[in-house]
Structures are given as structure tokens and as C-alpha cells.
Length: 181
Image (cartoon, rainbow, N blue to C red):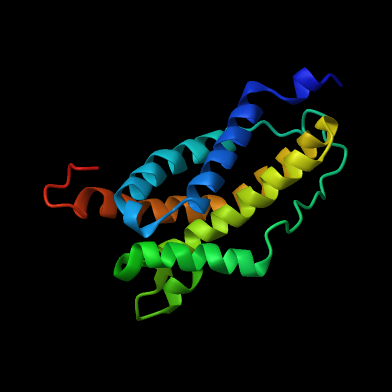
């Protein structure tokens, strides 16, 4: 199959957004909290839409194997560094109440979630994806797309939409007039 048909505009856009997200996370600094929150509230919905719109390479006959693993290019210590840096950035605002937690229906007490952990979880998925895409031949990209699409549906799509609520709240309620960001 020609590489031009494997690298559709939608796939290239998703790869670019995944890379942009990873760079934003890697460059996050406490002194740029307002800009970072504004960036995340603009970037995350675009990633969601791009991932949801990815065509299924398996259904198109482009990926021979469904069981593709993106691997673990991001090791645990790097994940922890990212999570800790984000936790410092959000400080006391890092924890929010989570209503979509599966155990919530059995609990009488609220369940907390962490913005930093949610963003780090998404980072891990997108980092592993971008590393795979960088290091495989073009004809393997549909397999990477299939894997990230499955992971999106099974795991990180819910994480992404859940973390948008507290980020939106911080963006529009974390300033004096709510319109500075």
C-alpha cells in the first residue's frame, strides 16, 4: 500500500496533536500555570475529536494484526517525574471529585481524582504512541493507529473528558474576573 494512503490527513493531524500534547506536558512549569491550563483546555478537545475520528485501519484492511502493543517507551521514573511536576503546578487544585469512577455507585463518600495523574496517564499513552510512530516503517503506522484507537476507546477517552471539567473550572474561575485566560 502506498505511504500516502497510509498517512491520511486525519492520521497526520492526530500524530501532530499527540506530539504537541507531549511537548506541552514536558514543558509545563509552575510559573506558567495560567498559560498551561489555557493550552490544555484548547488542546484536549482537539485530541478527543481527532482520536474519535480516526478510521479503523483493521476494518480498512490496512493493519493485519489487531493485537499491537504500543510498548512502554515511557518508563515509570519518567512517568513519576511528569506527574510530580504537574502536581506542583496544580498544587492544592490538583484533586477534584470524580463522578464517573466505577466504585462511586458503591460509595457513600466522594471519590477524588488527580488532574496531574490524569494528564500524566494521557501523556503516557500519547508518548508511547509517538515513540512507536517515530521508530517504525510507514507501513506499520496503521497498526499503531489501531492500537491507540483501541486504547482511546477502552481507557483514556474517559480520562480525557473527566479532566476537562476541573481544567475548565480552573481556567474560568482561577482568576479575579474569570476572563484573563
